[in-house]
Length: 615
Image 1 (cartoon, helix red, strand yellow):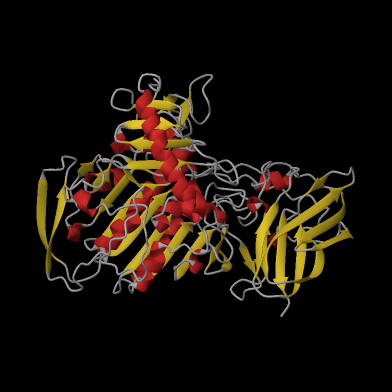
Image 2 (cartoon, rainbow, N blue to C red):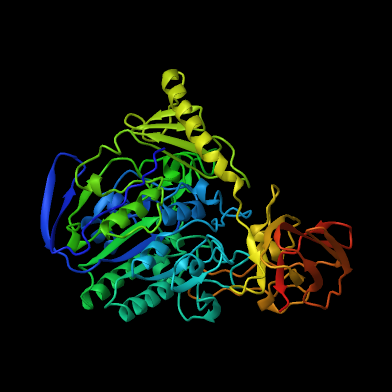
């Protein structure tokens, strides 16, 4: 895969420019002369788990998305745009312009959603160029230092922890309504539905910075599970037998409504014309489709719903898992007419594209895996005609060659190195042509081997939680980030029912000294003792929110820890909230292992652990 090292040398003061916008036919050009005296603002709207077929403009006859459709009609559309098949890897590639493998992000759990400390994000580059930066919603690249949005270039941060509501790092019993989020590093309760909160606070931020250039990353956690939404959005879809999940459609309808309000607000403060507005998603549809009988739940063929004629859904290596919508609109840049680009494009192309569109100076020689799409928009597809793109999601802590991988080249797809499909004749990937074209398979496998040999050395770099730094002290670690090949407890319901599992955390001690390590079964905000059951989360009237599962008390008898060369154990008092250990740690990288021993001898890990340097 090519790296782009190009510095984008637009003049610093532009009196007039001609921006070319083209259709999918590369030789047909249409120019618009515009006056450009100000840096464009940038809003990136990344929705969660919304597939290509979950939008009315893409042929879904049941869902109503009038505002997304209008943006579609007034944008340049990438119709062959691919991301990683799951959330965190896509966000890592999008933010850095690197294949997610380079960033340390291979999956959504098991400590593999943490972005490497060395990675520089588009927010940092925008900030270096005088932009105000803000993110609202779902980050999913680490909730601790040094992975947090504020550690990666964002001035203003309002976010939910983890990858979704009800995951172990999410504030306990959040349910999308009137929840507690992290605002600039501190917990704060907000009124309203989560998507409404993200958009309303984004608009407030935009209003406060309307006279200065800003970069706003608006990343909704909808329409990720659990599928909870106000019934007024769900009801129009609940009796339609063609719709697999009415609440999922309702969550998208709410996003659509908020997009319309955002556009209206931008127009009302005279910012719409000079704002680059991007709309995209992080992976294929999670709940907009239902597989046929006997089909694999991720990789099968669709029997119900709308998947735009594709096989597979979220987390699939087939087309439906990673081909997603992408629209870009910028009136002052001449990008305000419906145009399709059908060339193969990917998530790591967006960072270099925004660098060129916004005339950003790169203070470092960033080597992108992606390429700027501006030449492609201008009708020059020389860098895209013969490109190869690799996407995958790894259900493991370390990458394995070809595992759940799709190699894409023009209309061809080689899946896991053994299945070859021609999308021109077989868009649903039903007929494996590997035996018919063995020479093509071997050619693609050779290309993959070269790419793997180039990228594999980067895997030695591991993300570590840094403890003992004033940026975050104490540090709370969540079982969601355990490194474990036999992983279970990444949802709050797993904690409620006492799922039996364990793993370790990678920890870097920044400064030698005395540290206190506290082991908990329940998160600190619950104030629950180790031997307690958690109370039920109630159902919410007028919404699709259901009550939480019954909770199980665990009779924990003993605890122990291992870190560096320290091994310690202590008996457990079930009336205490935690077991505390005081340890002397040396500077350096290590693992933290924890154990709770139950009365029957079974051992589990401490689902929550805090590490605090004593000052």
